[in-house]
Length: 160
Image 1 (cartoon, rainbow, N blue to C red):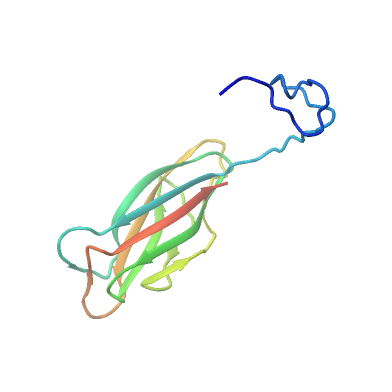
Image 2: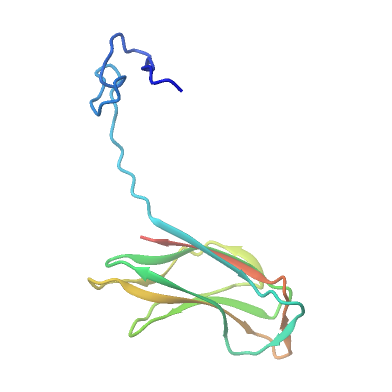
């Protein structure tokens, strides 16, 4: 690569845009665009192992992760994908923290993609709050249900 100036269509003379200076060429006006990039993160997991095993009716945590929510920001679940082999399994995403409360996502099916755009938690305080996100499963049927090694989930979150 050479450091020769690149001619910009419309520029007849050597202007500031060709000298790599932060001034704007008068022929080619540049607008400043302010882009606010929200904090986006994903969490995925699967049951794993070598064989299936029975599951009870009380929600059991299968995965957990810590998340810091800055002051005056919200944790939003934008996408949830999950698939469980047994139709009696119910998937849910909730959180725990000292003295805090909020919403809980409960899956509508045993295998689907949902876009709930659900605000799980809003930090109204002036300090950062640490949440523990919980990914849980439970049996919703009166008969025994099993979790299989290939069962899994994917969730996309935004902090705004």
